[in-house]
Amino acid sequence: PALPVPERPALPLVGHALTLPRGFDGTAHLMREVRDLGPVYRVRAFGGEVVIVGGLNLVAELADESRFRKNVHADLVELRQFAGDGLFTAFHHEANWRKAHDILMPAFSLGAMRDYHATMLRVARSLIGAWDRAAAGRRAVDVPEDMTRLTFDTIGLCGFGHDFASFRRDGQHPFVGAMARALAFAQARTESIPGSDLFRVRRSERFRRDIALMTDLVDEVVRRRRASGDTGTGDLLGRMLHTPDARTGRPLDDVNIRNQVITFLIAGHETTSGALSFALYHLTKHPEVLARAQAEVDALWGDEETPDPDHGDIGRLSYIRQVLNESLRLWPTAPGYAVEPLRDTVIGGRYAVREGETLMVLTPALHRDPAWGDNVELFDPERFTREQEEKRSVHLFKPFGSGERACIGRQFALHEATLLLGLLVHRYRLIDHADYRLRIKQTLTLKPEGFTLELARRTTGE
Ligand code: HEM
Image 1 (cartoon, rainbow, N blue to C red):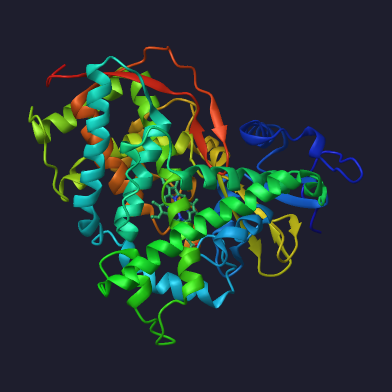
Image 2 (cartoon, helix red, strand yellow):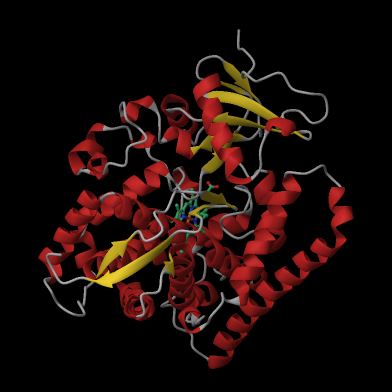
């Protein structure tokens, strides 16, 4: 007979909420519970409940799309207030998911990266301009802030031909602030007693204004594109406006396009920014890894003052790619994804789960499964050599989610991040001036908080 999923004794009404810390402490707590309770357990908070899954065999089982599909869990439902039926927050049965997926997939193929390469390089050079000035003035740079400027400008330009010009501003772009507050507000709602936001009227008003700021900006970008008479399909916006869907013969509707643009602006920059920041953190703390990464770029670009990497160079930076993958193993910046059973079923050969309930794969726990070896906390890019990858189950590494609903932007993120890391390690020595201790901040995604570096230009071989 099937057993209930294990759980700690819960209090009436609040369930386990009193033991669940907020933000990243909550994730760290759930990761410890995987060690203490095993790779599957249930948590309850304020009437909602989630089954946490953190081990290889179960994750492999949940990847079976004839039994499970993406679950739009409580946090994602909150995000629908501003991302609607955009790709990330769409219910799997919503017609617009399939339609947008089919229209947009070709824009994210490996081959499509050729079209974005020059723009990605241009934005990388604005960051390098800013870092050269910081190096000359012996000023420290705030790594996550600058990575966010880079990834935000990159998706703005590659996706919509819009220049947010983040490196020409002192603070962040207003959209980034509005988005960060809206995400925090939406998440806080799912962590509190339902209805208590009545007591937070001012913050609710702010939330509405932040949503308006985001939608106004997006509507303006779309309006300008339509007014320009440009009917090209060379970027995401052009594709969405002018590509008919094979099934219906119609392009996406305007409300859906707005939802997609907001989705891409959010999904397209937060996670990549965090991934770059963690990679730079690990490179700073592992001089032997940094030296190998530098040797790889030096072999390709020599001591050129301003190397001009072409699209094909990205595939040659295989060690840099290993560094990125290993960073995403330890701190997958989107630290989970959820599926739901298509009908009541039994998982792991013994635990009963119900149709439609949230089964949350806790990726940082999966990425520490014993199948990774004894020393799972050690940062070691050797885990991602081709031989190692071929030996291992594909289900052990899921930073981009799983199956049909996996990340559409994966190649985009990897191309952008590999290019930038290559250029940075080629040009700078990374000086850990504040002897940084890792502190992780979690909003929807993970970032190393307060990570600053000093930089010095290197000459090759240094
Ligand atoms: C979905 C991670 C970069 C756009 C996802 C999912 C994960 C993920 C885990 C699955 C979510 C779920 O199942 O609920 C990441 C990471 C990135 C990254 C770690 C960077 C290192 C990007 C970029 C873009 C993007 C650059 C766009 C340019 C999306 C979209 C979805 C998605 C639209 C929803 C896909 C669908 O359901 O059809 N991402 N992502 N992501 N990501 Fe990414």
